[in-house]
Length: 371
Image (cartoon, one colour):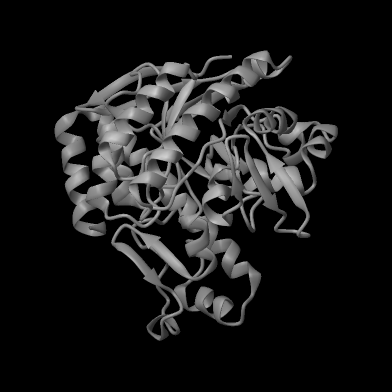
């Protein structure tokens, strides 16, 4: 089942549209909360439904280790397992190649389990079979994500190996007895901040022929100007009729600048992680609720967002819960941050639909607040 992108409105390179898969459709540009092990931390499927989430992420590496992809399949697949009827996108495990530093060869990656230290292997073919068992709607090909400060030779090797794995992963996907009918598969562009390597990787990935395309290996510590130049070098070669996904980006300025360069889909742990640790996203920027000045405050978290899921409680009360490590605080702040970011994405979509002038105004306002 190919992922079909339908363009509805544009503002320069910015796009508002709809992505359709075997499961149904979702609006873009969109933000996808990260439920690494099958749940966004502190939340469940009913929370995501109430927030209006259309796509949730899960992680292949973690689910294949605990409880095991076969166990997820035995419990009805990821949707029945989590009782989530919306879309699910699974990362292939490529980010764990960046974060866990396994032994990598052309064959694949050999890890030590973060749970019990046992050895486990992930190849492009295994990434396909594990994601098929999990039952995600959108699956990612296995890639090599290098460090933002990697030397050019390391970046070249990552691009070459990512291209090799892309062909093997696509062949395995198309040969799978169920995956092509029930799932779609995205390829991933790498190359660090080297614009020439980004162009090369994009051309190689598009040459394989995926259902959608992701830009990986950015927002991992590089300067924003470098990130955006690398993004432009990638998207310039991606098909206009396919969805485009920026992996691991969740800050408002980064999102709106990436939308301006033609990106449709985003994910990041940032809003949930910030909430768990007391940082609140608002229309005026972000602030630390743990600061002493909020101890006696009767203000809401964000006066400009009265419909926040945490809007009925004062900053003073929520700070109290945070200070005594009451789990309710992490839950409510996570709900607020996700609701705020999803509302922000609605504003981005509306601005794109309204045309170039409206989108330019939003872009300038976001840069002033979040720059």
